[in-house]
Length: 77
Image (cartoon, rainbow, N blue to C red):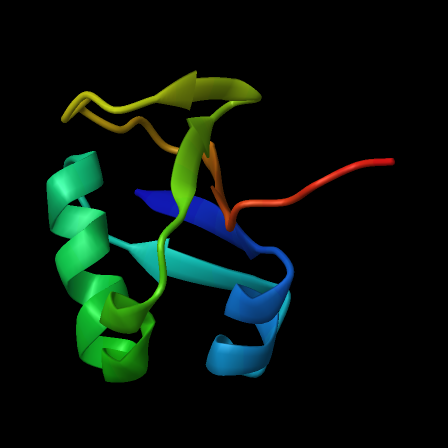
C-alpha cells in the first residue's frame, strides 16, 4: 500500500520536498510518526491534515492511493 503526502508552505521547506510517498502506513497516526521520524523538526510547526481533500482531525485508516496534505496555518487577503 502506498499513500502520497503533500507538504505545503513552511512544511515543504522543512521537509525539503513538496511530495513524498509512504509505503505500508495504516492510519493517520502511523503516518504522522513516520513523518516525524523522517523530519524531526516538523513537530515544532502547527498544521492541519487533509485526507483526499477533506480536513480531518481523526485517526482514520488509510487506503492505497490516498492523498494526504499537511497544511500550515495561512492567511488570505
